[in-house]
Length: 160
Image (cartoon, rainbow, N blue to C red):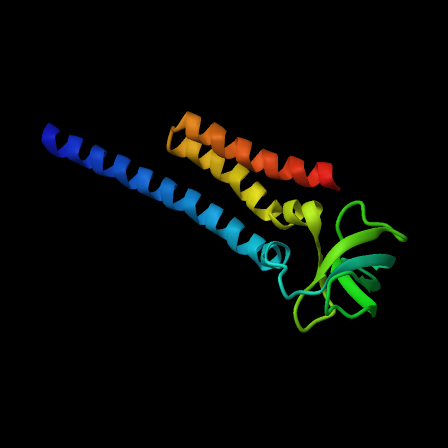
């Protein structure tokens, strides 16, 4: 095999590796955004949604139940609503929440809800940082990506 053909093959393999790593990083971040958006949309766009407070009465398996006290115009109090259980949720806790339309499911509201909604994106950014740094060899971008993910996770931890 001539040296020129070998060089072209190596260049093509390097380009294919770069494209594959970039596609993987983008896929991981898009999956994080997609997963986060199912909750985040209710926290970000609260106009016309029922907002209030949930008093946790019991937690079992992966969800907590409690009563809903309405705080926004047009919201109706409810005897029973549920939320996916998160770390630190205990009986008697009062959480600011937003009711998902046409359901009894609520998501955390206010600052804590914002950061909790974006936790999947924070984790995805941390995973993508490894791909960007190791696979693409873009150290500064990898550190920036990791920092963004860590800030989201830290914000969720701090706001409870």
